[in-house]
Amino acid sequence: MERKGIKIIKADIKEIVKQLNKALSDEWLAYYQYWLGEKLVRGKFREEVAAELGQHAGDELKHAGMIADRIIQLGGTPVLKPEEWYKLTNCGYDAPEDPDVIPILKQNIKGEQCAIEVYQKLAEMLKDKDPITYLMVLSILKDEIEHEDDLINILEDIQ
Ligand code: FE
Ligand code: FE
Ligand code: MG
Image (tube, rainbow, N blue to C red; front, side):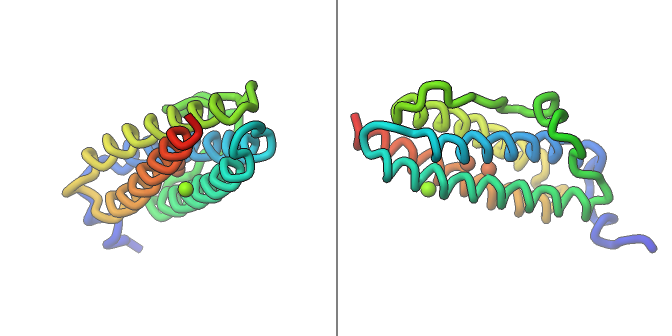
């Protein structure tokens, strides 16, 4: 049966799904980068930094879930294989090779700044065209801005 919720969208749904799958790949890579960072991080304010990284990992996983649910609702398929994440990602993956708090924080700040740009562009694309995906993107953008802010505040406290 035809879905009214799909019919109201005034943009190319295939393109929306494509962009959402790119964002979904970013979220999984960001999740792992934070998850591993939490375990590896060493140095000044280690416990505080680790707690923040762990909290952000949880948020990125939540974002991945929101995006996958929306892709399915739009009739698309969430990226099926982890090997695709590297091909689709906008922001890439920064391996936490140096576990000191400063490089870990800087890597994740860079990731958040990339995410903010990605979601800002997606929001512009969706505005007035797909209100529900737009709303979701704004809610994720709000979290990414909070993440950037939290990490910069910790970095400034340390330095
Ligand atoms: Fe995220
Ligand atoms: Fe984030
Ligand atoms: Mg936080």
